[in-house]
Image (cartoon, rainbow, N blue to C red):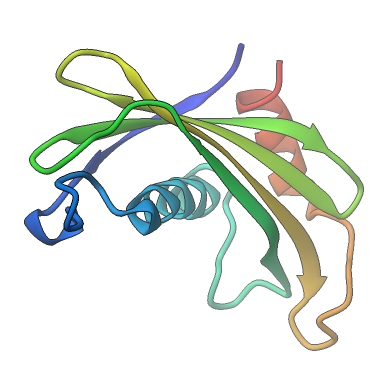
Length: 135
């Protein structure tokens, strides 16, 4: 299966009062991984593109606790590529022992920068997603 992998370092202040990563850190790791891929591999300019990617849904299933100073490895795949949306599938692993700590999903709808209405996924982005993250 095609995927992209990205390390995500945790910080001391990412731990909550229970001694493990706060749930928002998992969402930050996933969102950062997707956005980084869009910029570097998807040739998507978030500042000047005529198209924006709006997150309309996200979820996370927590499997195993992680805590600082763990480094996470985030594996990104495209689950479903529609006309105006992409469902991103993400798996998060603790690098020290390889255990999966979470699984998540983000749904992006692509909209016009000015209209904020759904538009087709840009052709160059679709090609990159299908070549690198589907399969």
